[in-house]
Each structure stands twice: as structure tokens, then as C-alpha cells.
Amino acid sequence: MVFTSPVRLWLLPSAVVLAAMGVWGSLRYSHLPERIPKHIGAGGVDAWTERSVGSAFLLVFVYAAVTLLMAGTAELTLRVTPRDEMPATDAAPFAVGASSSVNRPGSRESARRIARSLLLLNMSVGISLLIGCGILWRSTPDPEVSAWLLAAMTVPILAGTVLTVVAALGDRKP
Image (cartoon, rainbow, N blue to C red):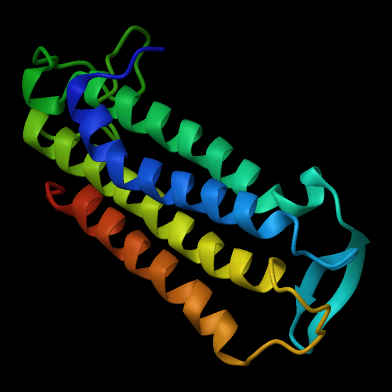
């Protein structure tokens, strides 16, 4: 799938975060201990794994996959025919052959706003995972994790989610 110009432009911040994760991980990999965190629970690191490219770069791979998924979703959002361009129909909403306008953007501008907010949400997820990489890529196998980690990883995702919900509800009418 070739992304349209707006998606490529709005995808740039996520690409920068992904590149930063990859470069940082590449620089840190040789300095990692033989055992790195596999799972971080409420009490700190509670599971360990042997260092490998797969285990050390798991968050980078996950973010790359999420970025592709969100970019595809943003692209499809821009390609959907908005409600204001749909032909008027008097058919009942669930009638056979009736064109559904449920969950469609209200206008092209609304579709752009939703697509942009999805890619900002993706960047927020990347920032959260970047914080997780800071724990994963420490030079010492320390099971202690600061209490601020959960908040630091949650706040960017919540902010991106709020932006996306506001954008999606922006053109809804009662």
C-alpha cells in the first residue's frame, strides 16, 4: 500500500521515534547484560530472559508493527466516502442494499482530523515504548524499577487517546 501525501507527512514524527528507538537500541545492544528484563510488574522486574536481538528489540518490532497498522488505518480513513458526500437515501438503516453512514467521518476535513489524530496516537504509543526501552536497555540487571514508570508510560498514551476521541466525536450530532 502506498500512502498518500498527508499520511506520509503525518507519519514523520512516528518514523523519527522509530528511528530513534532503533539507533538507541543498536548503540546499547553490546553493553547489555546477558540477562535482560522480560516482564516488568508492579513490584519491578519479575521475569528475565537471555539477551538476543529478538528480546532486546521486541519493543522496537512491536512499535514498527503498530506504526504500519495505524498508518494503514489512517490511510483507509482518508479513503472512506464521508457522510456529506453520500447520496441521500430514504431506505431504513438496516434495509437490504441500504448504504450505511454509521461511523463515517462527516466530511473530508473530519477524515483528515481523525487520520492525523490516529498518527499522533501512534507517536504517543512510541514515546511510551521508548520509555520502556530505557528500562529494558539498562547496563545492569537491576530488578528495581521506579514507581514513576507506569505513569510515564501511561500519560502519552492517554493524551493521544483523548486527542483521537475528540477528533472522532468532533462532527457527531445528537
